[in-house]
Image (cartoon, rainbow, N blue to C red; front, top):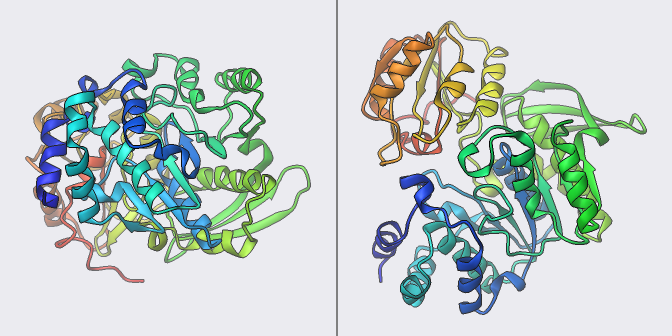
Length: 438
C-alpha cells in the first residue's frame, strides 16, 4: 500500500468529523479500547501528558513538547486537526511520521476497520499510540480532539492532566452551559494524577475542584499562581514578564509565538512544568527558555497569529469560536495598519453569529469556505456577515479570496485569514509566505 492509497483508505472508509461533523463522533471509548487491545496496548508503553481545553490546547501542547525536547527527552506530540498534511498530527522530536510508517500501519491494520468500525479520529489516535510506543518516546504530549471525558485519547494514564480554559464551542456535543462543558473537559482528570487548569472561572472552578476531590488529584489554577505583568512584541515573537504571586519573583521569557493570547498559554505551561518537576522530571531553566523561544522550529506549530507575509502583512489564525475570535480581535486593536482585510470561512456546526459578532466592523470582508462538505457555503456566511454589519463579498476558495484582498490592499494594510483550521490549511504558501522581513 502506498501513502496515497493509505490516505484514500483513511479518508474514504472512516467517518471523519472534519468532513461530516457530529455523525463521525462515537460517544464512548469502546472502539479506542478495542483498537488498543488489538495493537497490544501501546498506550501503556510510554509516559504522557494529556491536554484539553476550549482554546489554546494546541499551543500549550506544542510549547510543552518544545520544552521537553530541549530538556533532552525523546518527545512524542499528537495534535489535531492537521493543516495540510495528515502527518502533522504525529511527531517525535518535531519530526513528522514517515509516509511509509503510515502506509504500513494502515495496511497491517485495515482488517480492524471491518471488525471494529472505528472513526477516522479513533484510528489516528491508535496510530499515534502505536507510533510512539515503537519509537520508544520518553514522554508524549497528547492533545484531546473534542471534550475530554469521551474523547478517544482518554484511555491514557498521564503524568499530568492540563485543561487550558473553558469557553463556548461544540455546545451540541458538550453541553449548553459552561459548567457542563467543564464537566466534559474535567473527564481527563485521573485518580492520583496532578492536574492544572490554566484559566480559573467562578462558574467552572467548582466543577474542577469537585472532580479533583473525587479523584484525589492535586489541582492548581495556573492564573492564581502567576500573572503577566508586562509584555512587548519583537521581530520574532514577544517578550513576556511573569510574576509569581506569592513571592513577587519576576522572570522574563522570550517566545517565538505572536499574539497576546499566548501569554495565557505561557502561564499554563509554566505551571505544568512546575508540576512535572515536582514529580521528578528534570527540566532545567535553560531548557525551558530554549523551548519557549523555539516552539515553531522544534515542533512545527503553524496557524497561531502566524505572519506569512509583509507589505501588506498577511496573518493566519485558526480562531474558530467566539472566545478565540474575541482574543484575535483584541490583538488586532494592538496592531498598526492602515486598513484591515479579513478573509474568513467557517464550518456549519459553529455558532456562526456569535463568532462573527466578535470581529471588527471597520474592515473589508472576503467570505469563503474550505473545500469540504462540513464547510458553510461562502454565500451563506456572507449573508450572515452582512446582517451583522460586516461588509464584503463571497469567494469560492480561500486563495481567490486572499488574492482579491491583496488586490485591494496597500503595503501598510493588514490581511487576516481566520475562522477555521481548514481554511488556514488551504492557504497556498507557495504564493504567500515568501516575503517576510525579519
